[in-house]
Length: 635
Image (cartoon, rainbow, N blue to C red):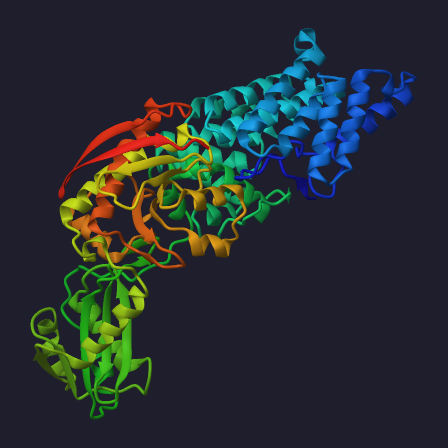
């Protein structure tokens, strides 16, 4: 049986706080539903009275009328009229908050709604009815307003205050008819408040994805990849097998979160991943641990024990094969491109056997380590007895590269009447490996060091700054839709506008937009995806696992030992031009981003968002010193 969604969706739109567990598309609005319930209970108990006899009742009637009107301006007018009649009409403030044009306006309406609810209920109600608060119909407007207040506080960056509200509401109503515990668990996870999260999980022990996967994550943080953590993860995967696909990015998160979910279904996984992604990403090694928890493909292993050659019986069987004139080539090479084996990206070794005479690939295999003579022999035997193409036979000649381990095979090949020739170049094999490298590399962008004018010193500075930025996690201190104006004495084309990403937990990073007008259009929701792709111009850093990093950059990270914070925090930087064009940054862009990554966390920590004073910083870069000036964009 499908359950209603436990909490609210996290999006960049203003929250529809009236949509608690009882308000989803196709269901009555909770305000109208509660009015009908009050009327029914009043008639049943003989206490029914004409609601229009009191100012509060008259105001609530106007709110009910407003709910039947689709015109937003007219709805707002009725809500204001309701407040003129009764300033304690909490639902009127909620309605105005939902219709507000900005989050700041919504915040003020929710604050007034909470205050109105407190006045209407009176201080004694909070003591008398604590523990079963939602059971009284008259408390529900207050609870909705406070939920809305907490949600807007969170999106504006007032995280601790938002959490305090939800914790207090759960004390008033431990039964949690609004599903606050699911929202709170995601918030505590994103803020690394693990002791409080553990207490919350213990208070509501349940077999939902939100609970069992969060328990597994906490066990991993506490014990690492210990049996206790593995046991929690195995239990979680039994409850909902779909969650890892969304946390690991194997399946994309939908634009709109579902209104309903069933225990163990895809919708439950989407709702959990949307709220908990930040906690998983910010836990070093957690996503790699989750990725490695599933069934692992078995890669062929090279054997290291001493090999003395094939047995006499094996040689006899090979001599029994038909021999035809055929010149083969064989080689083993480690690929420059990475591929995934056993859940890990590696540079694999490929063993190929080809027929130069007939232009065929006869045998191929992929292994983790440099192949031994025994494994090479096995591949040659496979090519003779069970070729990928053609009929089984012995060649007349095998061409290989000079040196070991092929030299060890010479006497055994001679014993089955196959000549072996050592060459410096293998034309056919070289061509096949070139094609294979191209296919595996695909459309990978150039590495940072491939860009004109980019030096290892510049890239090292960028990686160090990116690691410091990730550790400081400035997204925890900022709300949605906040921007920082960045002026640089090297920029002749005007300021950039920095946006810290990570508030939702889906993507961590920093973007430097060229155009504030385009950025504000994005915030307003007035830009389509097509317009966004066409108009947006920005220099962007995002953090993810190494699957999104080019092979060239991964090789350089290893060779130069550049700093990466965790397996989930490889920084990827690119310049997004108009249209769909993207490229790695030039040297001066890399240094500009380095300066922003270094200065923005300190700026955020020292400057409240209403402090519009400029913050000056001097950046030391390989190409020379430059200055940055940072200030909040007054939205």
